[in-house]
Amino acid sequence: MNYHNYYPIDVVNGLGTRCTLFVSGCIHQCRGCYNQSTWSPSSGHLFTQEMEDQIIADLNDSRIKRRGLSLSGGDPLFPGNLDAVLKLVKRVKASCPGKDIWLWSGYVLSELSEQQQEVMSYVDTFIDGKFEKDLFDARLEWRGSSNQVIHRFTLD
Ligand code: SF4
Image (cartoon, rainbow, N blue to C red; front, side, top):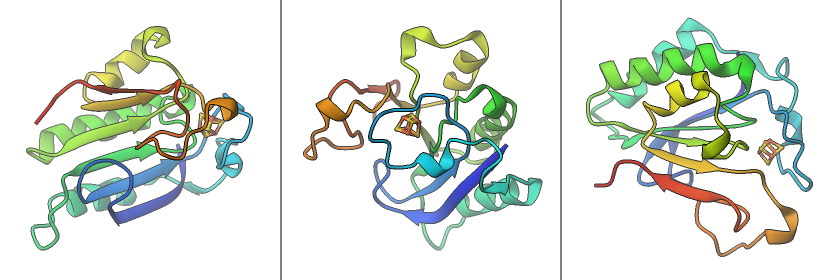
């Protein structure tokens, strides 16, 4: 898997202070996508073991308390990303007690493959669906268009 950006401290992608990873790779080609440079799975930088270790260390950093990890892109559920994303979310749940995982994808919940569903079993909040330019609404929180649904599997 490749990624475009990693923000160790982020307060705009989900609840609270978070670590946020924008991965490469997306097949959805939404009209008006703000992040077209992430579409190619070979764009950006290689997501290395060191990068994964860094995320885990940041989530467990007691000096700046993070609420959890946000995964966006690109699409974390892009088929070529699933092995790396599954490994990451499993490790977060095993090694970072109490941290939640938010994930944004162009797929909708009802159409996920078995492997995508396996990733979702570790996800606390899922924002699904393609960005629909005609349904754009700047007042929406954590999503760009009104067709996208925020699924909160675990609540505080
Ligand atoms: S799912 Fe996201 S990254 Fe992919 S094309 Fe749509 S808006 Fe862009």
